[in-house]
Image (cartoon, rainbow, N blue to C red; front, side, top):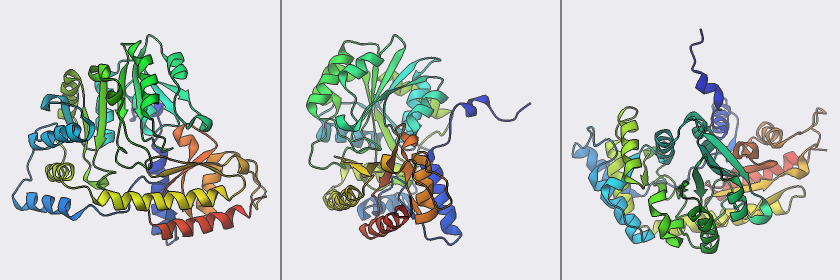
Length: 399
């Protein structure tokens, strides 16, 4: 009799987490690794947010709270949606979890039955398909391509819909590509969804504030008729550099919110009390610091685009949001290493960069799209410049 549940054999650990862990282990062994694998801003959490947490500790706010979030935080989330997104919610439509990933996990676990289908455009955030599988659903992967800016077309969406379709995942700005859907694209997608009332929409807006040149729109800004069928996930990790604080939130159908609370009551219970206070002040406080952060992200993005465009065999996709660069590496497939072995796929290419250049990036296969790799530029320009220098030296060795 095996000790391990069969369900664990149905999915794999996150490759982004795995590569970040390998990079950390190499660093502990004394190797000078530059890790560009993790989606974690290098900026510190703003002082006014940290001070609110310290005050909460000093005030003794260190006990259990309501399972799915304190009322004060829920009110700040409601205000955020009203002011920034022109969307109206009440407290029984809001849930707070231990990060956006936790909220999505709870959502899928509380709504999917065996065989329910979830439509996921590829490339996708690494955890979507595996969380669907863990919830006994069936991920339906819909291919997108670089020529169409890695966005699902209405036709491809419509062709992927069956009677078993239950959720459609829309991530904009997207991870790993940084693609952003405009109003017209969202409208065309909404036409298909209106015709298929059995499908719910999961709108993952975690990179909402990290956007260049374009404007952010949620699908509900374009088609309010989808209000009851749309569940929005967001959080404070990316926009406020609060990854370790672990606060995410969701807004949507009251019945779903109740079911999420039920699951959370028997798993994690409430999110950290102190982090909830910090998140409240993050959402309600001034956000001028974001302008400087986005300027730096854009500077880094532009540097990387120029660098990878200059390398024959590499083709970067220009992102409109988030802080990732998705680079096509088809020109290096079948290149020979010094030992005579060939690079057969993007995983081999990424492994080579880690071993030879001591630069950690994530292979495109982790996101369901090869041959690509993802670089996170949520780190200093100096580190990025050094990483690019190492990459250039390493790929020159390939034949």
